[in-house]
Length: 71
View 1 (cartoon, rainbow, N blue to C red):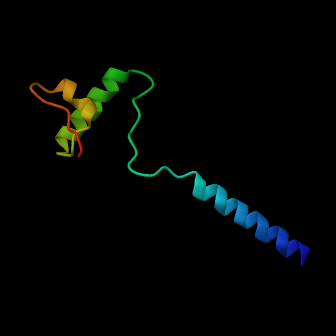
View 2 (view 1 turned 135 degrees about the vertical axis):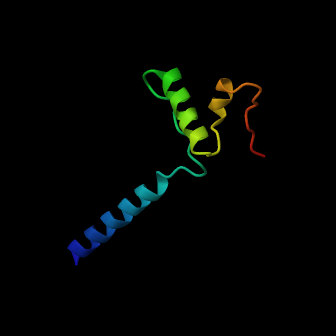
């Protein structure tokens, strides 16, 4: 009986810890640690080729572009 309580307690603690570590909402991709400008430019070019929604960081590499704001 004591072992069952211990296992149950450890299980509840693990579930509590896992449920508290989540980030709510969308995740933003961080900038590269090395060759930052080159990495951002390469990622923006790939997004443009694949016709995906552009990251707001890509506006600096486009002529006449403005950053996208979400309401």
